[in-house]
Amino acid sequence: MTKMRERDDRRVYRLSIWIRAFAVAFLGFSLLGLLGLLWSQHEGIQNRNPAEMVEWGAITIFAVGWAVYVFGAVIVLSGDGIEKRTPLKTNSLRLLEIRGRREKVHRNFDGSYIRYLQVIPRDPLLPVIQFQKFYVFDAAFYAWYDELPDLDAMERTTLR
Image 1 (cartoon, rainbow, N blue to C red):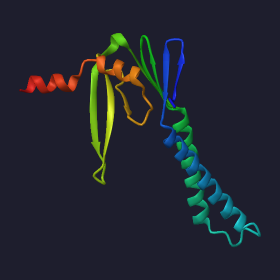
Image 2 (image 1 turned 60 degrees about the horizontal axis):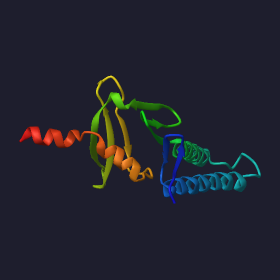
Image 3 (image 1 turned 135 degrees about the vertical axis):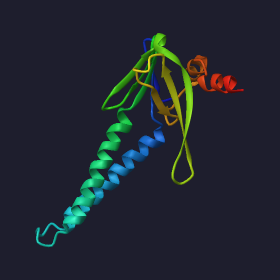
Image 4 (image 1 turned 180 degrees about the vertical axis):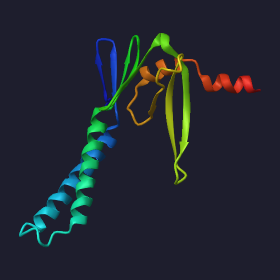
C-alpha cells in the first residue's frame, strides 16, 4: 500500500491516505452543511440568517482549498534532485545545490510537536525545502535523505 509512483527515475510521494480521506470527509461535511442550510431556507430569503450563510460559505471555501492542497501536494525525488510541488508553487533543488539536511521541531500551542524535514541549499538565496512526515515515504527516500550531510550533527560536534 505505497502512495508512490515511479516515472522513469522519479519517485512521487503524496500525503498520507488518512489525511486525504479526512480532507474528503471534511469537504463532504461542509457541502452537506451548506446545502442543508440552503434547503432549510428554500421558502424565501426573508428568514435567512446572513451570519450562518457566511459561516458555512467560509467553511466550504476552506474545505475546498484544503482538499485542493492535500491532493495537489507532492514530493518528487529524481536522480538529479528534489522538488516540493504544491498547487501554488514549486520549490526544487538539484543535488549540486544541496548543502545538507536538518530536522526542525515545532511546538504547537497545545504542547504537541510537529517534525519537519528540511533540505538546505548551499546558496542562501535558494529555497529551503521543508516538509512534514505526513508524506508516505519509502525506504528509497529515507536512504537518499540519510545520505545527505546531517547539518544538525555537524553543528553539535562543533559546539563541543
